[in-house]
Length: 216
Image (cartoon, rainbow, N blue to C red; front, side, top):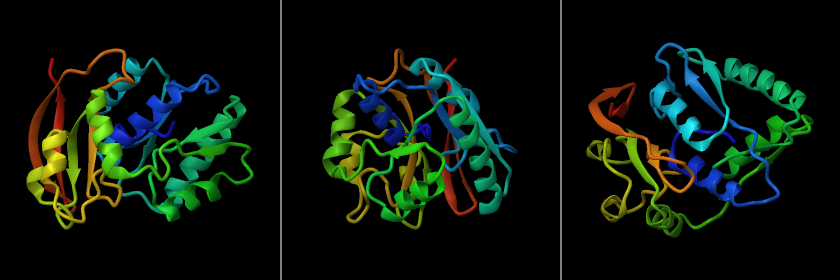
């Protein structure tokens, strides 16, 4: 599973956990080498590791440089795909919802690798999907906000019904257009909740980031 530490990959893996024909081999995640945080989501590596532990799955961290060119990123991914295939992996799952260009890119990059891309949440209506996540017990914090698309005040907020009610018109409830990214600390996909607390909120590189810390 392509794991981002956020709600869409968490919900995707929950769907896969319920499929008796799927044997989950592990999760992989790109991490900023300089800051040791999940790319885009800015989640600390330690919390990523705790998610993998609660999922009961091996974690493969793919370190990427900062800044990272597309060429460098694709080289790292190409080597990982070859390694995964050698280990017998047959499918990569992605949490994409409706962006056709992203899906096409993933399909193109896996072409000829003998690894099939699958999309457990594809085309599910996001207003209903977001509510379903919350009602299932999934708990997440918004760790990154694009202030050009969503007010900065949403950074650090809980992903819940109140937040969904407050989203401005035109903002996707799942943030599929890059409005926000999240960190999941509880939900039916985990064996136990991850204790966290909210740290400082900062603006960097045109985005607003809320630091999430281990509560212990």
